Length: 634
Image 1 (spheres, helix red, strand yellow):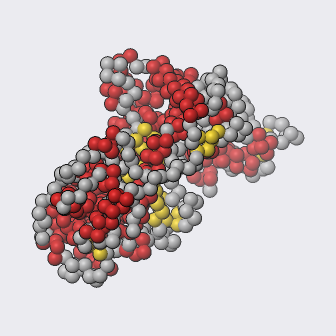
Image 2 (tube, rainbow, N blue to C red):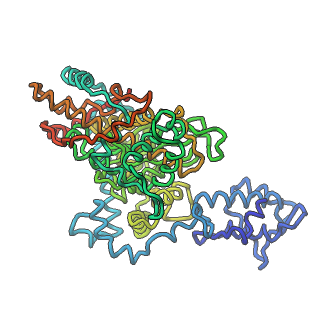
Image 3 (spheres, one colour):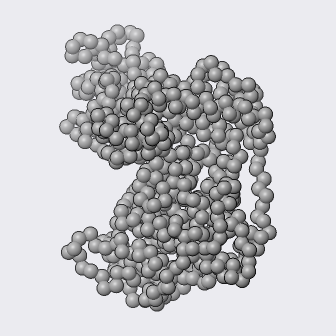
């Protein structure tokens, strides 16, 4: 079976470095695959001994027999070769010609000569160089910048440790611990405002919310048949609103047709399949994000510069051939992976199979976000705390911040000689855990080729991150990615330990994305939340429909909240921006999800909405008042 798969007529393997020992051993095994004896020769056709130094000592012991010099134990040799081949395919040290998943990703990178033409402007754009300095920015500049960043962060943490009452470092183990932050709690005025807003929220139906946002934002115009030959719909707005409601709630077309007069399950299914694509759904989501960003009320929650990325488990049917069991969640299904803005709205959504490492999509979602809201700070959970993700985020100009399980992470020293008065135990034994800046400097061109190629779209970040995380021992670019990631992650961890306001922002980001997950699942109530489609494209579309509907509700809730605030101001209320910051748009008590879904609101064009709100939100930005613990979906 394995020899059949490895046949050159079916799969052509190629080494991605100058080290071809595994492929040489595979060729030797293939030449002797017809052998039936217990042993085969250890010498190739040229009379040279076949190198097996790539294997572990245990494998070499199993393959070599001291009593049979110059021979391999055939079955053990074959098992060793295919085990090594599988590992090198995983790490990217061996590629499959013509494959997408196992291609040689280095061939997709832009040539250095091409990168040089735009490197100066790119470095300024992502913040690696200042205007006017990019021409002189080279490998030594990049190295010096990273060294200064790490030395500065460590020195600041060491100098501030005596006055950092919240941080304690165990001198024996070096494990840091932070005292629990006790929030002051909601101010009485904020609690009173929240209660008043909830009491005044007008009763809404999901269908009506979708219809009004379609009139206002015109996101429905994104959809249509893929070609001009398809029959046109007599009422595209109405049909697209109904389809978005049906698919966004996960109700299913035929079940929905039982509750919606005037439509059939076949019609809804046809429109969803033929008039909606992943790309068009992304564009419609971006339309709502842009409209939400133009509302003054959104400034109460953030300025759009930060985003939190996190996944939540979505059930699929157990007999789905594409379903996998998640090690993390312990049940079959997939992951709905959201990038949620600090203004509560979702910028981008992926559907990820359970067997895929979630972190590869952290950067991908940021790059595919086509809205006007372009965050620069990214909060990621444990999945996103690997070295390659930190490295690529830095090279692309994103500030990646840790969220959880940071106690078990290693801190790295700038040099073997680096020692600190108060925080030295963080870095482990003296002289250990040291950054290899020589390697980083030597790989500067390759690192820049990777970064610019990802930004230009010649290679996707998800394809790239599947390889550098894999632990290749042969590719220097992989190793350089690891070293850059070690620098940036250590810097960010030191910032996290020494900056209490930063920790509160991280907590707020975590709460928002987790609340979004609950809110989107509350909206996607159909079929008990189980994704019925087997097709990966339809599964991805199901997540996009849900994100579109969820964003429509968030936008509509924000408008209702703003209108109530205007009423209160007219009544003489004094409303502080700090109090508004505690009002989440994830409100559900006023929304009717069930019953017969009337379509009469589809024909009612609403009045234009107001974006302005007579509240000064400047103090929130000046005082960095980002409320933690907000946004609990009902």
